[in-house]
Image (cartoon, rainbow, N blue to C red; front, side, top):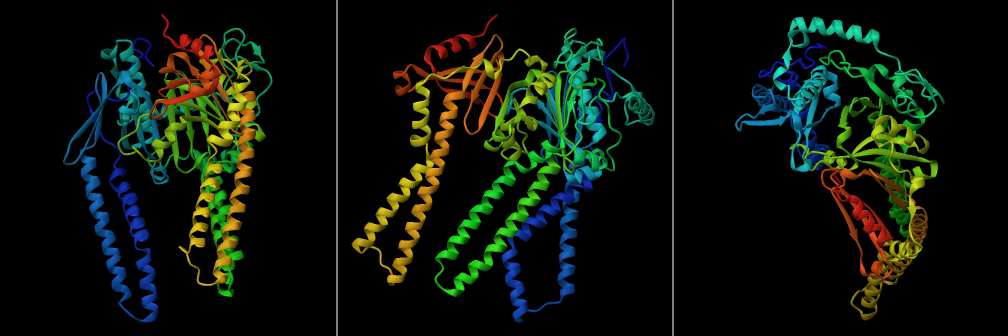
Length: 634
C-alpha cells in the first residue's frame, strides 16, 4: 500500500468490466435442468399412464424415434437458452465511477442500477454447487435503506474478482468518507485483468501466504491464559487489561474441516487464488465436532420431517386398527414400512444437507466488519459492518435449553433483491446473520466480546429486574386458556361431534347398517380421546412454560443498551443498542391497567421489515422510565 496515497484502485475508474463468460454456458445448464425437472414433475401422471398403455399393447412406437425427438427438443431448448444468455452477457457490465458503482443489464429493456459508495453496507456472495465447480459466484451489494431498497446482484464473477470487488468498494467508500475520492489512483500492477497485474498479484499472494500468522488453539481449545499480540501482556479475560485488545483468533476444526478440507477450500476451475484481506482478522472461530453434530440433528428441517414420520406412523396405525376386512388390513400393513422407510430416508438426506451447509463454517471480525462463511458444496459469504448491527439475539429452543446450547445471531437491516423477493432467502432474513448456529451458553460472552467488542458494556442476564407477582397468574391464563390453540381445537371438535350426533338422532344422517354406525362411533370416540390427551399434554407444557416465563424473564438497561429476556420452554434474549431503537412503545389493555402493568416494546429496523422485541406485564412506572430512556439525547 502506498503511504503517500492509501487509496489504490484495482479497478480502473470509468471502465466497463464484464462478468465471466461461464455465464453463457453454465447458466443455461441450470435453466434447462429446471425446465426438464418441472416438465417431468407435471407430466408424471401421463408417463405412468403411457407406461401401462404400452404394457397392455394399446399403443406402440419406435423407441429410436422417441429418443431422437427428446434429444432434438433438449438441443433446441438449450440453444435457445444459450442464445438468450449470450445476448444478456453482451449487455451486462459493471463500472466503478468516482462516487458510485453502476451495474448495466437488459436485452430489450436496458437497465442501470447504481449504488453510491457512501451507502454501501455489505458485499456478500453466494455460490451454488454448479457455480463452485466453475469457480464463480453471485455478488450482492447491499445499501442502507432496508427493504425499500433492492440489493444490486452481479452474477457469475470469479471468486478472486468478487473478493477484489468487495475490497475495492470498501476502499472507495473510505475515500468518499474522507473527501478524497478524486485522489484514488489506479495501478495496472494491482489489476489482475492485465498480465503485469497477474504476475504482481501472484508474487504478493505467495509473500502473504508465507507471512500469514497461525492462530492459537489449533486443537479447538482455548487456553485459560493468553498473551496479547499488541502489548505482550498475559491475560485471562476476553480483553487485554492494558491495551483493551480482544482475545486473538482461534480455529476449531471438525471432522468436515479435517477430512474434506480440499473440498471446502476448493475454488473451482476459474476461481483463482484466494485474496487475503489487507486488514487481518482480530478474532475467528469455526464449529467443533460436537457443535457441528448438534447443529445438524437439531435443525428445523430434519426435525420437521421427524415429526412427519411420527404423524404418518400414528395415522397409518389408526387405519390398520379401523380396518375391518383383510384387504384393507393388508394394504395398511404393506404401506406402513414403505411410508416410514421413505420418510426416514428423506430425514437422513436432510441431515447430510444441513451438515454440508454448515461445513467449513467460519466467523471472524475484520476491522469494523463481521464476516461469516459456510458451506461445503454450495458456499456463501455474508458480512455486516458493526454500525449496521441492530441487535444481538440469543435463542434457545426446548431441546437446546435442556442441553445448555443456543443460537447466536445479529439483527440487521436486510435488503431484498428483485430476483429473491418473496423467496426463502427473503424469509430467512428475519433471523438476521447467524454467527453461531449451536454454541454452549458459557461461550456466548467470549464470542460477543471477540466479534463485537463495542457491546462489552451491555447488561447481562443477572442484571435483569424480575417481573411482578401478578405476571404469573396472567401468564397461566394467557397461555393455558386464552391463547391455547389445542384447547380451542378440542372445543371445536366437541362442537362438530355434537352437531353430527344431533343430525344422526334427528335422522339427518343415515348409515348403511349397524356395522357402519359402530365403526363411526368407535372412530369418533377414539379420535376424541386422542385429541383430549394431546390437548392435556400441550396445556401442561404451556403451563410449565408460563411458570418459567413469569419466574425468570426480565429486563435491564444501562446508558447504551437494552436487554429483554423472555424465558419459558424456549428462551429469547435481545440486546439492543439505544440508538438503534426506532420506536419505544408502551402498551396496556384494561386488564393490565387494573394491575398497573404494561407491555414494553422496542422496535428496530432489523430484518426485511421492522421487528419488535417485547416483554409483557412490566410495571407501568418502569415502562414510563423506559420511554424517557429511549428519548434521543444530545
